[in-house]
Length: 330
Image (cartoon, rainbow, N blue to C red):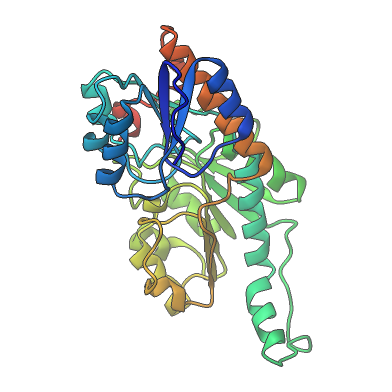
């Protein structure tokens, strides 16, 4: 953990590091940066917030609870190093008059690339073929692969990441169908729109999730909706873990009702070492790193730092970046 250098204001980052350019930017605006280990329990984070009497929190990993938010009377703003805010108690922040801001657009391209990479890997059976060859088998005589061109991909959510994913999928020759839980997201750039999610699911080869986790979207992909999907279909989740009922997903994969799934986010992070999903050969997992590339990490930290500087300098929070409890509380 860094020791403040005596600047007038302090921000606590819930991680070991952020982009050096963002640290310099904050330092140049009279703000010291204190680091707190990722996934530390809220009690430990609250103790550091109280110890350093921070003016801002930049959230990377771990839970920001009411205990953390109330630990420093100087706290004036919370900013997410990214866009997902389900690990922040938005209601507690709002009750204390503390805005929660997101680094909008900072990692859209990176997450979309990861979603497409996972989808291609599933459709092309890369994991089972890799396992077979390494075990001494040679499935070439019996294997017939699937085509990407003409595959139907359904996107749930059409924000920045959904738009990037749609464009990449279209460039690869896929047919794109969009369903957005938010009726306000009406602009879909000419792609087919499915107003009814249940009607969209049976036609898909790929389902890719790109919406926020809210009270209404939690477990939106449950046992009933999984049963609507074709056995050939695969699911990719680079959004938030709670969107999928993981127990129901495990059952569908185990029974062969679904061809495969690739998850970059989970209901609990990190997941338990004995999670039943790990026994499933048709399940691929990555550790919530879809948005973590050199370019996106620098963009996320830079945008988050500028939000902090602006609010601490007395400016109103950027309205477009505000995380509102009425819309996003999970």
